[in-house]
Every structure is written in structure tokens, then in C-alpha cells.
Length: 400
Ligand code: FEO
Image 1 (tube, rainbow, N blue to C red):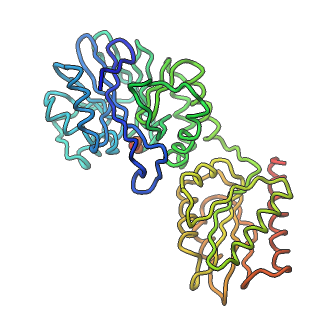
Image 2: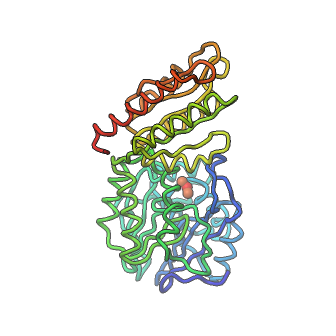
Image 3: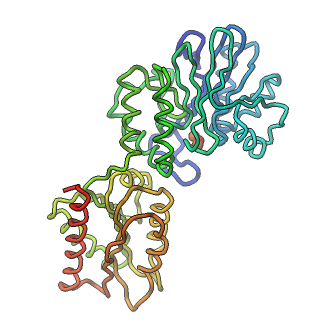
């Protein structure tokens, strides 16, 4: 790849992974991703900001070769996860004098995960500045975006904030055709999906980290996934998105995740959707037999109520419904109300099982509706009651 300059003596050296369709063997990547890495050439020292996923190390090494660097003095490792740190051992083989600059927590992770030797590190503290000569790096600890060790770096003179996972998006942009977001609508969904899947469990800490970022003076946000944000409108756009997503605000919306085996739950679900819509409540429904969990995660950011629809399999919920409930619990959404609808043949503990799984979310569980066999007219009255209950609850918290 040709040299991609961001500013004077600052280059993009990352890799595009547009073919990748799953992350952590869990998260679908409909738009692929990038692993962004950057070179900063100061008048005295040269720093590499993060590395790339090991599957793309040849791209990073090729980009560095193309820059014809005589040395790398520092590798700034913001985050221990291997999509950013995984090629550091290869960098150290080629540039053995380089020091990995990171905090104590990340150092410990990198020693465990990548078997990097202690001698290769120099640790930094929160707020510390390191001079590269005519350019200065300032490190700001921002735990839990995405792991506990994560931090961000301000390049003071050039006003660039390197944020690693924070403000990232899984979007395989072509760096040689343009580094910066130029269409807010286009990046909104990949950024929201990314936030939903990676960041949403840490809402309260994200709010604190946003404040820390806001106190810094920068004109460019350079994350480690997806395109960069340049200029006030664009940097404020992504920061405002994060403000909204990490707030406690919810919408007059029901997220309904369901699965049906022989049609009974489908019939209940269809009736429930119709009753909610009659009451002016927006419904986002996902059939768990083919749903993309990224879409479910995104709706968890907004929905005031989550309802799980499931048949009874043997004595409990369908395994896909268990997965959905686990996901809801793991992402710690701001959802205020939860319920269960579905069907059974002869008995079972479907509701107890799901209620148990969802305990600790802080949401109020609304009276579930579990119907024996194919739903009859009087059964459907119970669904209307649940829709009424949701309407009332949404009104109580000021959504209507
Ligand atoms: Fe992109 Fe948490 O790694």
C-alpha cells in the first residue's frame, strides 16, 4: 500500500479485513472491519500506535517497510486484545530495540497472552506525557473501553486522539481512498452496532471516559476500527452518539425476540405485535432461528421493554431463547421491563428458567403469558392484557 499520510510525519499503517464476517466467534461483521495502526515520526523518536490482528500482520509489516523506517522506538499498546496487540511480537522481532509502552495491567495481559518478555516493556501512568522530540504523547486511562486496561493517547501538537476500541466501528473502509468519515448516516449503524456489541455493558464508565475525552483538545479521533473522524462536526457527531447511547434514556419500544416450533408461539407473537402496534408502541421483532445478534444488541440500546417468545422444549425454554436471555443479561441493557410469552404442551418451567436467567438485570418482570397448545380466543385476551400492561408501564416512565 502507498504511504497514507494523516498529517505531517503521521501515517496510517493498518489493515483492512473486509472478508471477515465474525468476531470473537460470536459477533457478526456484515461490513467487515479494519485494524488501524499508525506511525508517528517525531524529530527524535518514532512510535507505532497499536498493531493489527495477527491474520493481517503481513499488511502491517509491508506498510512499515514502505515507510522505510530506520527504527521504531515505541510501540504504544492501548489494549491487550489480540486484534490490536497480536502482531506486536512480530514487530519486536524486526525492531528489537523498540519498547512496548503501556500500563501495568496491559503489560501483564501481553505477557500472558502473547508471551512478550518483561524486558520489552516500559510502563506508563495515567496523565503521563512522553516526548518524541517535536511531538508529544499524553496518555489518559479509560478503563473498560473495551477491557480494564484500555487507555487513549493524545498527540498534543497535532491534536489527534488515538482511541483504540473507543469510538470504533466494524466497517472495512479503504484507507487509501480516504481515511475520514464523510457520511454520518453511513457510519451511524456500524458505529452503533459496534457500541452495542462491545461497549454497552459498561455504560456508566463510558460516560466518565467521555468526560475525560471531552477535556482534551483534539481535531481528529483516530480509533483502531473503522474510519477516522475529522473536524468539529464529525468528532462531535460520534461523541454525541456515545452520549445518547450510554444515557439512561429508552424509547417507547418493545424488543421481541422469539422462536416457534410448530406455530403456536408464532400465532401468539403475531397477535402480540398487532396489539402493541394498536397501542402506538413500536415493535422490533427478531426470529431467533435466523436473527443477527448485532441487530438485537442495537435494539437493546433503545427498547424500554424486552419480551422473549418461546415454546417449551421438554421442560424449559427453547435453547435459542436461552441464548437470547443470556445475551440480554450479558449486555446489561437499560431496559426497564421484561416479560415472556409462549406456549407449552404438558407443563414445564419455562418462565421460572428465564426469570432466573434474567434476574439481576434490574428490570421489572411483567406477568408472563404462557399458553397451553395452540392459542384460543380467550388465551389471546391474556396477550392483550400484557400489551395494556406495557402501555401503562411506558406511560409511567414518561414515554407516552
Ligand atoms: Fe478491537 Fe477489544 O479489541
